[in-house]
Length: 119
Image 1: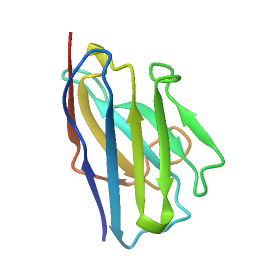
Image 2: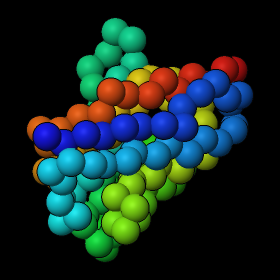
Image 3: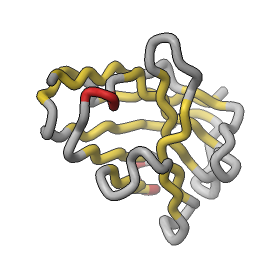
Image 4: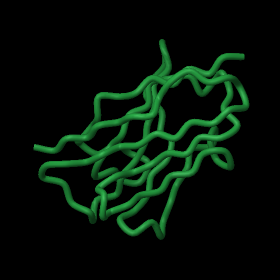
């Protein structure tokens, strides 16, 4: 069993910042790539960011590049998503993903955390 628990979502005004966390437990591996995806109402799930096991290789989706930063702390089995300069179009449920393959989701998901950006 792999458990991923996201936290840090909430309501923020446009231009503000939020930091999401994803704590992993169970049968996880610190060598897995980890990722963040999001899904807005009526839209398909979208790739946001991914990080390899030691943080040396990072990918971002086009819509968040330059505003969001993904990082990880393997000692804490936690992945972070720092979101700056938030826009109303960033409003979505954000999901943590484990064993991410490039920009394609791996098999393990958290329950999601809501991020709402008001204009």
